[in-house]
Image 1 (cartoon, rainbow, N blue to C red):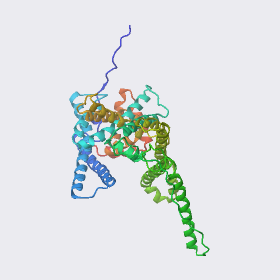
Image 2 (tube, rainbow, N blue to C red; image 1 turned 90 degrees about the horizontal axis):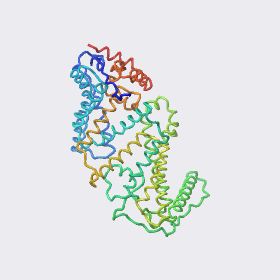
Image 3 (spheres, helix red, strand yellow; image 1 turned 90 degrees about the vertical axis):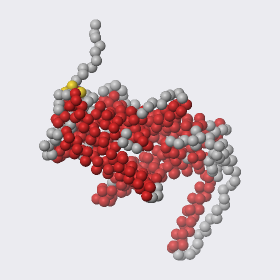
Image 4 (tube, rainbow, N blue to C red; image 1 turned 180 degrees about the horizontal axis):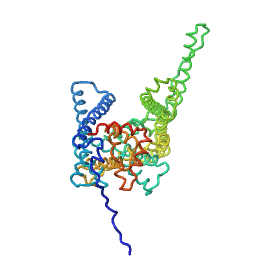
Length: 472
């Protein structure tokens, strides 16, 4: 009879010099070099983040605000620096303590332990945000690992399904609750409009619009030969025609159960235009900033940037999402002769289909985890679930450990942008960590690492020669 047995427990006798820091024979010196480099890299990163946040919030630059910003930058820099040098420091420490490496001591446990220390150095208000981000990336990473092993298969339109279901749940809460304090509801309020928010006593219930549109005087053409005056008349007539058209749409019928001003058609089209412009503007601004050097070298690419799909798709998604949600909500109020928070379910499912214009896994997983987070908080507040002590910290540490473990042993399954982040933060040192000594674990780590470096266009030879030149 066959006997079931646990998977073979493999260990390797590789030294930390050979695996972790082949450019330097001293664990202390190698760790200190990384500490200094990571500090300045982290300082640069968080200075950009905090200044951008300051600009977006439009805060007045008082002494108090400047002091809080500087202290926040310093604290976050210390947090990320501790993460950076704590990881190799603990790898070396565990190697000296146990005398060997196993599959988890090469990355997972050192990363988990360094995360425990580092997250306590970060501001408590930022911990949930960091946890949400790394959990988002870790979820995608675990799914990629499962696909690579053949355990699951990718689902067609998977991002859209996740986004649609998660958004529908969030929209239902948005329509149900009197006070929605989470930042996600602020985003929904901006996208679908404040009139769709839940049943507050102050929520206005407008009457139908019966008054006719105002009469507008039409400009007459003039026989004057003055070109400027003729152009003025033409522009005035165009503006008049536009306003007549807008008034014709604005003063169409509206259900007495709709809380918004003006007609349902105008309300829906107004949302389409606003969010289309916002999405297009945001993507265009980002694209112009990221392509600034290319534009200076070749200005002719500006036209392509303005009308590229990458710039247009976010606007299409946001505009259509708002249009579908508003129009379907109004339609349900017309059909049922009442308003209800349950209208958010069919309207949310319909609006979520707009995500096909912007099928981004990061956005879909972010919305999903926000929905889980809010659901968990509601269940705890209702007494259905216990509050897990240090739950945010533990989830953050586990997710970060998964990401570092994958970056070392299975880089092909890690999100490329996250590997680039680790590469930049370590000054290329993570690329020079010797993957060949990890091949006995049976994951073809060295081969996949070379493929990732080639795919991401990270010049491995230059980084390696630079670091090996510092070997002592």
